[in-house]
Length: 101
Length: 101
Image (cartoon, rainbow over all chains, first blue to last red):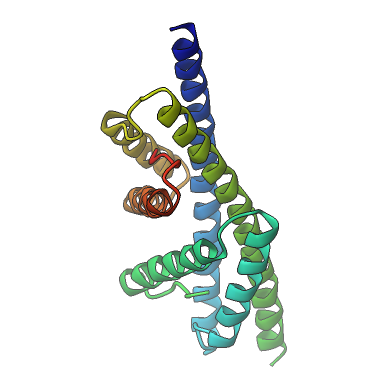
């Protein structure tokens, strides 16, 4: 019973940590979008391509390596990048001055 | 021409920032997964439910509010959480001692 109480307390504590991590993620994601928006403005203004497939390939390899160091499933790192790029494309369609990567 | 060169330099600089943000995200995501794994162990050990729908609803509302403060599209914050929970479920199926949220 006391053991269950202590498990519930730990559960509560861990969920607070998850909430903090999510808050940090939201702020980081906002900053990331601000950066791709600026790339969108620059590439539009200078007639540069807004997508760089070679860069995306390098990004995937780099993130997978980082994931290994962070003891995270590399497949997830790839999915993370795909998710972000998809969302940036979605925003780009709504606000054409975004860039993909 | 000099203007284009300076745009390319800025582009390179912004992409370096994006890479740094992504690296930070990978480490945060790894830490988040470690937390849900621990919840999985606790809930299995104490016969507690591993999913808490009420909590997920509170998480969505909280992240949407945070997104507004961070000047991020709240719809994206919701998508972020859905993506993470989906991935945690995917991991949970492979390694049953994960928790959803």
